[in-house]
Image 1 (cartoon, one colour):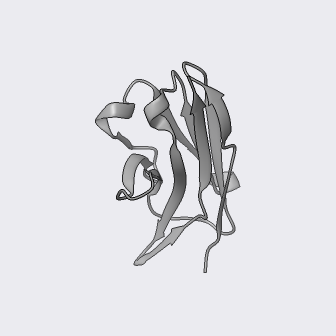
Image 2 (image 1 turned 135 degrees about the horizontal axis):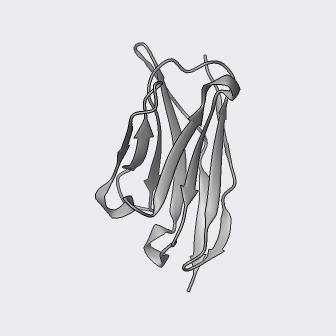
Length: 113
């Protein structure tokens, strides 16, 4: 079993920046990603990164968010720039090992306008 722990969420002003971190208790050999979910809505992909650094972004995040990964620290990051009010959500970290998928508990991002 792998545990994922997110941190870095909080209140940010519109147009500002925030950096989320997700630390895994063990090495993640597969893709890691960030998802977000608003109340009453489905969880949606924000960005993902493979073990060799190939990234994928949702269209609305391209150019504003950057995902990165430190395999030595079993940690994935999400740098959020030019934050918009609509980015207000709970952000979840996800990691995959072979056929197992793990989720963090989520971290709240609140945007003030």
